[in-house]
Image 1 (cartoon, rainbow, N blue to C red):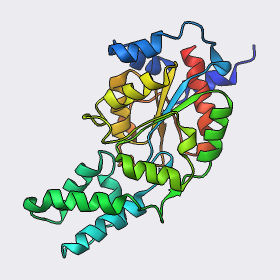
Image 2 (image 1 turned 30 degrees about the vertical axis):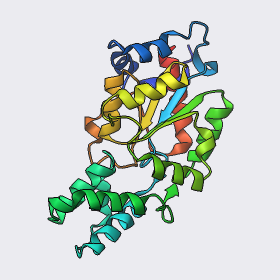
Image 3 (image 1 turned 90 degrees about the vertical axis):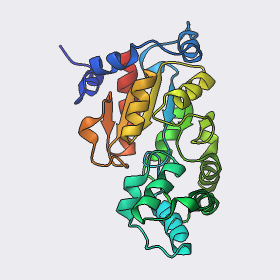
Image 4 (image 1 turned 90 degrees about the horizontal axis):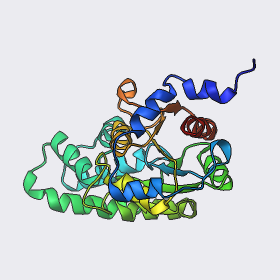
Length: 265
């Protein structure tokens, strides 16, 4: 008997049982309403789904510009620059945490932190000269939109730099709803930002696509299957992350999303 190729994709390194385990916990009421309010949806390839993305390290590589921003601020205080690898290791928990880590590494005085954070934000807003979109990411977004899925963005990047980089690369039109690192009192890995995007999109099933432990924990807390991009800012913690599937190139992302949806059907 022939085997459905999606069965192999579903199994991957992480069987469908992992996805189902992640989706079972009780959900907060607005999140539950968005999930359970769809009583007439299709299954498998043809179903409409909410596909939600992290930004930095998932769709774009912004680390060079974040590094440049950090070193501009450090130079103004007479501090030594940080490296690109150090920059990548600090990314994932929002600009404030990034500046905290940068300041600690260079032993900068705590008394100047708030001014330093504000200056970082000012420079960061227009820092996209060295940012690149990962190869295949735009084509994947085009395919997902053409298939009728609703797309969202859930990032810890502050809203103004998020809007700026989306406009710079003409990506804003792909996303039906965006939650940034300062949109809510909570930031990832708290599930509230992801739940807010899910509620706004109003369709299910839901998949969250990200690259970091922060993203993996967010998806788990929100009860959403997690699709892991392995070439982002994972800080060497790939083996620790619970996920439904992985991909290393964006040309493979849509197939993995279809596989997860088939598992959820």
